[in-house]
Length: 279
Image (cartoon, rainbow, N blue to C red; front, top):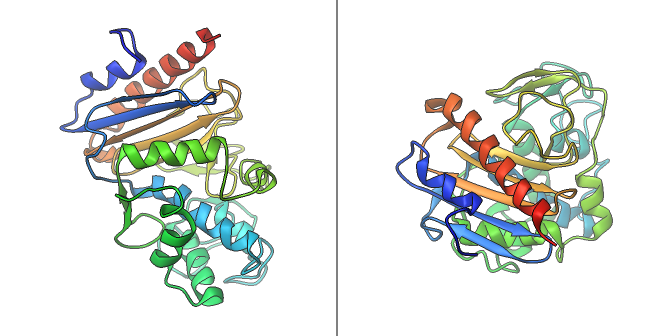
């Protein structure tokens, strides 16, 4: 897509050293900007990719969403939707399951460990076999925990966006379940954003719902889902606008949170507006 009015040209004004982005529409149209082969720390955006692999394990029968994991009453479903009662870090629960939405790296890592236990395959290998290799995400690598250790580039993440739009590794029923609000009455805090009542979440993906303010755009639908990462990364899919966006930077969210919460919504709204003008 050519022209100076492309939404992605906004990325060039961001106060970061390096940034790249891509849009993938539901009709397959792709637009990119920046060094799309540059490797970024995806941080928590990687939770979405890790969850995709975990859901492959669910579909192949290695584990189930109602499999008990961790404290009494906690299941894989609880962990993937940040409803397991575990803190941000640490394996000691601070509440019972389904009491509050507590954003938890520990919960995602417990879920990944459960897949390892049931398959006998190291999670980085399982992730590669289940997701990265089939989608030709050849530059993406897990260098740490499942919750925040993924590194990759826009070229690979646009392939993942295409998978989220039109799944080949999971059934549409599983993707629909993942993008449906789990435990819909739960309130909770979204890191860097504030407390929301309720705080909707799917399986591995945040669902925008009626949250205000938000890192997505004001025109993103309540059904939009995705994630942002503490390394300054973000990704969303909007089934109403029928488009998706990934933007990766090398500046930590904590260092430019106020800037990010201005330019991310601005870009998102521009992407949605362009999608709405498409025939």
